[in-house]
Length: 164
Image (cartoon, rainbow, N blue to C red; front, side):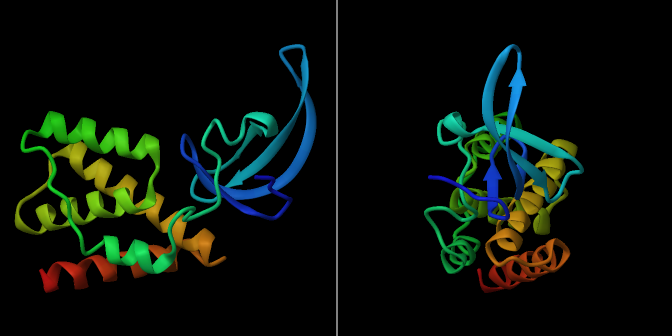
């Protein structure tokens, strides 16, 4: 799984972006090669060791899924735990695992819940984080604009909720 400069990537712990450089650096006395990734949604860059990239979850956007599968998953709201602490843990775990299809199903569930009653502060934060993560996936997979991807995602969520 080698990436090259300019490739879009997703690093679950930080988000998505583009490989801006493949550089050799000395960190803590060891010389290693790193992917230097410029993040799309958050300012700054991160460095991911090339030899540990797969182990750390670095992947191509929508890896294992395509755009249509992601959009379909937005119509497949999954049952979340009934208590908010369990829901919060469930969503947090899914965010750290970064499976775009599972995240889309969770976002659909929170979106439907949001339409019927206000979300708690924590749920609203997770809702916004899910929108941000999935907007990144869509924008990076299509080499597109983040704001346009977010608008498209919300439009699609509303359409799926109306169909339910």
